[in-house]
Length: 393
Ligand SMILES: Cc1cc2nc3c(=O)[nH]c(=O)nc-3n(C[C@H](O)[C@H](O)[C@H](O)COP(=O)(O)OP(=O)(O)OC[C@H]3O[C@@H](n4cnc5c(N)ncnc54)[C@H](O)[C@@H]3O)c2cc1C
Image 1 (tube, rainbow, N blue to C red):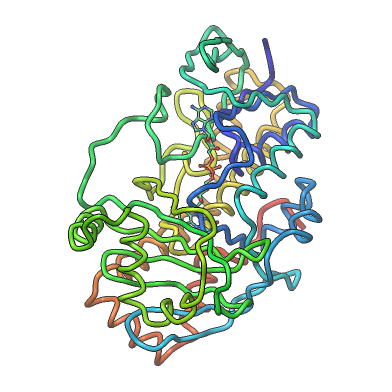
Image 2 (cartoon, rainbow, N blue to C red):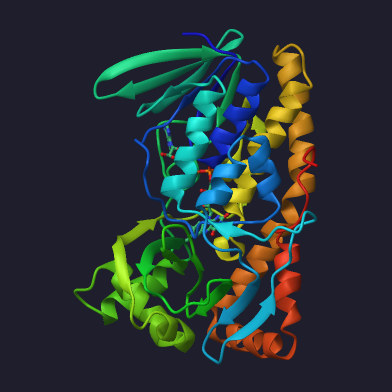
C-alpha cells in the first residue's frame, strides 16, 4: 500500500499532522499501536492558545463542550502555605482547560479519519527503511504483517518507550531518571478554576479538574527517590507510595484530597526524556515528544505535540514535490519554525524542575513566590501558554 505520508503514532502530534495533511488532499496513513479510548500518564491540561488550533483541526467545538472548567488561577502547593496567582489568558481571551486523554486522543484520531486519513489501529510499526524514494514501514498485528510505502515518514510515537524503530532506542536506567504517575480522583475540594503546581522532595506535579467530574493528579519523581519512598512504604504499589509521599510533603494537597475517591487506578510511565532532539534527520520527520520534550512541570507537552504536527504539515504544504530535495527543504524550514517556537519553554521547564525537586531550592522557590506571587504568572507566560501558533489567527 502506497501513501504520500505514513505517520507512526496516533497521539496529539500524529493526529494533528494527519488532520492537516489529509485536509491538504494528501494520502495519509496513521499507524497506532493501542486501541482507543485509552488512558495515559498526563495532567491533561491544554493551554489556551491551542483552542484556535483545535478549531482549525476540526475538534475545537467538541473540546469546548467536553473539557473541564476554565483555569483562571495558578498556585504553588509545597511544604508551606499555598500561594496563588492569576493565569495568563490568550489573545482571544481564552483560558486553558483540561480534557481526559481518553477523550481528547479519540476525538483527534476520529477527526483524522474524517479528514480522509487511513487509520491502521491497533497496528504496531516495527521497522522503517528507505527503499528508493519511498520509506518502507513494516507494521504488525497479532502475527499479521504489512508494509506501507510513502516518500514522507513522520515519527510521532512519543519518547518514553523503546521499540524496533531507530527513533525508539533502548537507554540505560539512571538514578536521575524521572518516572511519571497519574490518577483521576472524584470529590476533590480543589477550586474548579485553580491549577496548583506541586513541589515535593525528588519530584513535582500538578492537579487540575478535567472532564466528567474527574480531577487529575499527575507527577514525576526521580527514580532514586522513588526507590527510597517504596522502601520506606514496603508493600504499597508504586503509585500509592508516591501519593503518600506527596500528601506528607504538601499539606494543601492532603487538604483538597481528604474526602476523595480514586477513579480507576494509578498509571505509571517513563522514564521521561526532556530535551531537544532532531526535527528532521536521515530523511525522517519527528513531531511531538520525539522532536523534543519539556519537563511536564509546565504542562506544555500536548501544546508542543499539536503545534509541531501543525508546523510540519504547514512546511510540507509549501513544497509541491515530496522528492528528496523537497523533503530536505521542508525539513530545514520545519526545524527553523520548531526552534523559534519551543526552546524557551523547554529551558524554563528544566530550570523549574531543577528548583522544585530539591528541598533546599524548593524552599527558596517557595519563599520567593510568596513575596512575588506574580512570578507564577511570568513562569506560565515563559512556558508558552499564550505564545501564538504561527499560521493560526
Ligand atoms: C506526569 C506527566 C504529566 C503531564 N501533564 C501534561 C499536561 O497537563 N499538559 C500537557 O500539555 N502535557 C502534559 N504532559 C506531556 C504530554 O503527555 C506529552 O508531551 C504528550 O502526550 C506527547 O504527545 P505525542 O503525540 O508526542 O506522544 P504520545 O501522546 O505519547 O502518543 C504517541 C502514540 O504513539 C503510539 N505508539 C508508540 N509506539 C508505536 C509504534 N511502534 N507503532 C504504532 N504506534 C506507536 C502510542 O501508543 C501513543 O498513542 C505530561 C507528561 C507527564 C509524564
